[in-house]
Structure formats: structure tokens, C-alpha cells
Image (tube, rainbow over all chains, first blue to last red; front, top):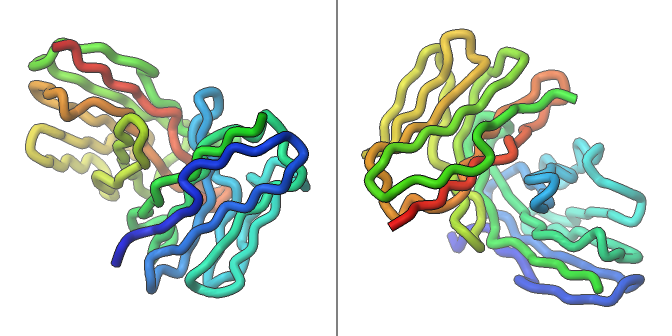
Length: 114
Length: 111
């Protein structure tokens, strides 16, 4: 397996534009996590899915953020409209068991909103 | 909310010196995980500790889980330049039922 695959690796967009980040988890993993990393706040869990169903989205900062998982091999995190304070590295991770096994992280998407 | 506190935030050591980072929680943890993130990279799992007082070793890395399962440490013996990066602890917060990452300890190695 190629691991967790995220795209794009880098995204620069203007304030107000819609941004869509994509993730392909490891095949067979039932859990998918979206994290945001900044210097100030560290690694924050935004939302996680179990078997494609969103379980906890309490970490999603605002209604501008939304996430979907239409099938077991694909998830998106969308920001609309984007703002400069959304600039961060967004990681997707997947795991086979919740809380008891390691999470495998993707390479991340570095988002810059100007 | 519940969180894991990690100290120190930064550490500079001479190559060959030892390094330790600590992770503390106000509540009992069911388990704790450690991750390493190289500069510009993504977090990579190192180990998971589950039992009270557990000690695990990976070459020059020693991981400990406190007897009360409220704290943990990662110790690196004789650091090398390849140890550069940020070390995170992560633990499930039972009340919220999700994994919380510490802020990490950034390790710099001076040649």
C-alpha cells in the first residue's frame, strides 16, 4: 500500500476562494482523521470518520469548514470561503482501530491563503 | 478541556548528549502513543504504551509510562543528527473519546 495519499501537497489561494483538500486512506482502515497543524495551536483534530460516517466534528472551527467521505477510499475537506487565518498544514490520517493502534499520516497539504 | 501537557517546548543539545521529553495528563490515560515529525514532514508513529510502569526500548530511544498512567517520557541516549525533529505524545481523552496530541518538543542537535 502506498500509505495515506493527500492532494494537493501545496495550495496557495486568495481569500474568499473555495479550497478542497483530498485524502485517500490506507485500504482496509476504518477510521479517517483530519488534522490541522499550526505553530500556535499544534496538531488539532478537526473531524474523524468511522466507516465513512462522521463521528465527531467538534474540532471543525467554523461553518466554513466541511468534510465528506463518500466512500471508503476517499475524503475531502472543504473550506468556503477561505481566510488568511486558515493557512496551515492539513493532515489526513487513517487507522484500523480507534484509539488502540497507530495512526498513519499522509504527507499533508500546506495551505496558504493570501 | 482535557489535554496532555508536553515539556519542554524546545530543546537544543550537543550531538552525543542525551535528551528527554515529558508528557503529563491530569487524568488517567488508557494508553499513550509517541510520534516523531521531521522538519517539513508528517508525524510518524514510534510506539504505544499501555501498561502501568511500562518501559519499552527502540535502540537509543527509551519510552516509559508512569505507574499512575498519567505521565510518560521519551529518552534518547547519545543523540545524533538524525534525531532532529519534533516529538509528540498523543493519548485518548476518555471523556471526549478522541486522541489529543501534545504540543510537541522540538529537538535541535548542535554539531
